[in-house]
Image 1: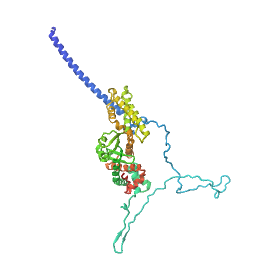
Image 2: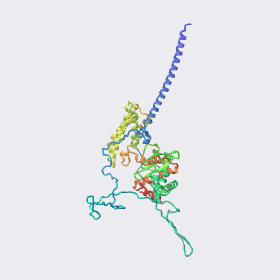
Image 3: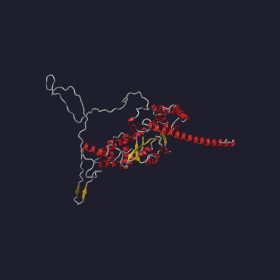
Image 4: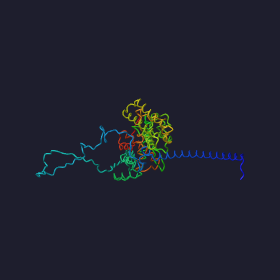
Length: 479
């Protein structure tokens, strides 16, 4: 083998160096790709672990979704140190004896147990009263209206006028129709079970078609009521808003709610966002404070003030703690615990004196604690996932909306009142299944609005429905 010249060796070294440089460049590029992929996979794993740990305690998932592996009860409330049961001053409910019973049955002693004497004329020295409350046999009362036709001496045929609303040869009266609607829309029986229950209770045949017709007519007579309640809500200083899914005709629809302590309005729509909110008709003209969760479409209504729900925030903060507490980096979860403690301290301060705002120095102290916690959350070493980092940014950006309850006593800490308004929809679906038509869902929303509003005005459901089926629905009036 011939020895290589110096020039050839130099050329070979240069070629090898060039090849090595290319290999290093390709290696560095591959390493960068793997690092990017690894980072993306870590984020994805973090997100999946967050979803896996989500339950009704640390997210907006309903308790029914927890399944058999539901977490142990763990309330965010502080102990009140009060005994269980009714508190002093609570108005209880019990069965009291009445002064004028419908029937009195006397039970005399058969005779003297010692000498055997007859006690018919003996002196009465005592009487203990025991009353049994029961329901007598239920029967339908049939009233026949005979419309008389007579011939006058002049030859004219004159016919009497039936009472208003009595149009058919046979029909159900307002009370019967009220009970039909009450069982169907008030107690969430299905049409079939409502018809069966009424037939068996009253001994009069009731069909599912009768149930549907009574409900449709009742809903149609609520247009003026819905209009007046909408006007009352628009004029209110503070209104709670929420929405929940309502399956209808095999698809997911949405039941929206707007409510105050005196009025409730439910509205069914196929959409969840702005289109449905505009159709409902409250938010477009509302200028008060809207209390809601952080669902973005609410913020598009800029003429209203906004207050965000503290209960939703507490669950989100609990999710951060549940997810990151096992990690070695305490910055990943300690900030959430600090925000929770400060938020609850302000909540209890507001609850201690609900007529006045929380003291300025108390608000300033706990706001500072929250801000410091958020600085730790957004620190580069915080090791937060994308979802939890977004929570910290939102909290930092909208802290005034979360703390509005401390400044304005009329604003509640949570939006639980709005959630309670739509809870009945979930009960309805569990008992009798989903809605079959949009019209049925709309009827449900109207009649539940009526029942929940009249309940807030202490009007019994049967009385309110009897007014409705008499074509004289209860109306709230205007301020």
